[in-house]
Structures are given as structure tokens and as C-alpha cells.
Length: 441
Ligand SMILES: [Mg+2]
Image (cartoon, rainbow, N blue to C red; front, side, top):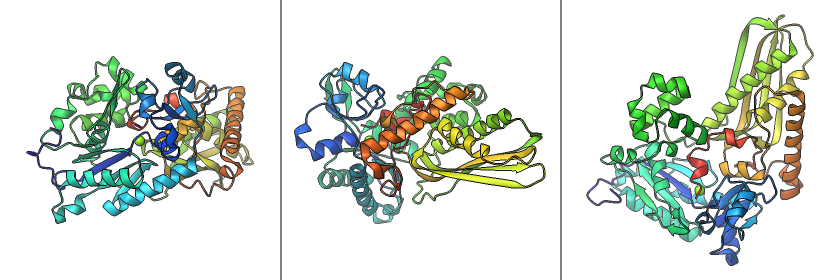
């Protein structure tokens, strides 16, 4: 099926492209310091709680990969060179990448610093061959930026993204197997190809979700077709079940969103019976925050601002908001802030409505969120005041860590970090390590 000349590779058959730069942070480090070429290099935290954010292919073929604790990475590869991140530099390179992409198609959607979807359907009027165009784009990225990339082309986002992963190198017993660079999933072969892939390669299926599906006997994408959606829904929730069933059928109708507007995601609730008890209010607030945070993460975003609203029985309502210098995507971190906000509101009797919202979004740079640190606190939503205190301390510690590492300007003004910020996140292991983090090659 690969790049077969007998298949229709016109843009009209393959309107969506996904491009992902190879081992982005590590590649930039090697680019700026040629002495590192050919060596096992990782960008991440070198400390005891440090996590690998990005690993060069030389590191990767020795068993090091993103999201792996640095301690474990060093065990696999004792001569691993671990470098701290230089985010302003990565943003600079990313801006160049997006500039090249914008010349290729005006309709593109960045997912993180090194990854984007492009809608190339507008090229079809010009009778462009999609494979040729993608090959050109890849060549331009390599010559003008100096970083490798993988590009997938397909009928929709699902196939484009799966395709870019397939386009990349794979690693086996210390050997790097180069990938094709561009991988085309034509409509004729997409079903057959989908049948060969594991369910973990799907967007949103991280280790935990993969395990849950495994217990239902679902290991390959095609196994999803042998289960009733209602059965699946009981185990993974209705929304996820619907999405998975659609993916297994090759259905993905999400458009490429060129201008993701800075909107907000909110959730509020009018209580059946007004609430007086403070602990109960906190519990509701945690739930609201969890809902909006998870919704936000589904769209691969991080937020900098939280707002809460409280309406009392006398119908007066008070809202409060807070902006953090570094974007967050963790519900516990946001909940700690939300609780402080709600506690700062003078009580005017029983509360009849409460809500929370997140705004000031940026695309999630999945690897940068993992690299800064790991809270390492086991994450029950119900937590003792001591645990909450510890969490707040961890948050402060993390911000201090960012200041120490990236300079005082990294936290405070936030101007330099308008996109793909170094986000602070806790309990990454609970999050879906979807395609992003496992394929950050
Ligand atoms: Mg990448």
C-alpha cells in the first residue's frame, strides 16, 4: 500500500495531512551543538523526579523514550546526556516550522510546538499530487530547519495522524529502522491497514485506557468492531465508546481548525438543594474543575486562567478568577486554586449554584508538560488537607523550579511564553498518554 503508484494520491482523496517533527527538543539541541550528533541525548529533568521529555533516536534505540523517569532512562543508557530545556529556542524553531507550513496551506492547526494538521483540499483545484506535495514539505523542513519529520496523509485526521506515526523510524534491539518519511493512507487500503494496528495507537487511548480495553479482549482496533457500543460504554464511558467505535470504522469528522479561538470551557450546576457545608462545596467544585479540565485536555490544550461563580439563595452572585503564569492541565492543581478562590468569597447564606471555567488556552506541548517535574502524589480526588497543602507546596516548588531553570522572566510576565508554555502538571500517569507522547519521535 505504501506510496503505491496504482493508488489515487490526488489531494481530493487525501485532503488531510499531519506532520510531526522528529524528537523535537533533542533534535534542536543537536542542531545547535553538532558535537552531540550521533550521541544518546535527552531533554528533560535530570533530578530524582525528572522525566524525559524528548529523546534522540540514538537514545531511543537504547530503550529511552518520552515520559520515562530520567532515573530509569539512565539505567537503560548510562551515557545518556540529559539537557535542560530551552523553551524560547524551541518556540523559535516552532515558529519557523509553522511559517513553512503556512506557505504550504493556509488551513493548518498546530497541536503542539512540533506537530500540526493541515487541510490541503484547497490544493485540489491545482491538480496537485498530495504525496509529491508532502514530500516537498518534508524536504523544506529538513533543509530550512534541519530537523527530520514524519508526514501522514489521509482522508481524515484519524488516518493522517496514524500515518505520520507510521512514517517515522522504529527501534528494535539497538537498531534504528528508518521509516518512509511520508506515509499515505489511501481510502482503498485504510480499512485493511486499520485492522493491523493496536488500539493503543488511537488518539486518547493511553496506558490506562489500553489496559481497560485489554481486559475486554480488545487489543487491536478491529476488535472494537466485535463489541457492542453499549458494552463498551459501560467500561469507558459513553463519549469515549462512541469515539472508539467511530475510529474503528475509520470515521473522524473533526475538521482542521485553523483559528482556534481563545474561548472558555465552563461547567456549572444549580443544586437540587442549596449547599451550606463547606466540605460539600469543595467537593462539588472539585468535580466541576475535573470536568472542565478533562474536556480541555481532550482538545489538547492547556489553560492559564480559572474562573468560578457562586450564586447564593438571595440570588446575588459573585465571581472570582485567577491567572497563573504557567499553563496548567491538571485538575488537582486547578482545584486547589479554585478552592482558594471560593474560600475568599464572603458567605451570604446557602449556595444554590456554583460553576468553574477555564480560559486563556494554548496548545498543549505534551512533552514540555512532562519534563518539568512530577508531583508524585497519588491522586484521589478526595484528599486530606495535608495532601492539598502538599500539592500547593509542590505547585509553588514547581514554579520556583521553572524560575531557577529558565530565569525569573519565565514566571511573572509570561510574555515570552505565549504559546506551548512549560506547563505544570501533576499525576501525568493518570492522563491519557495518547498518540502525542508515545510518538514524539
Ligand atoms: Mg514530534
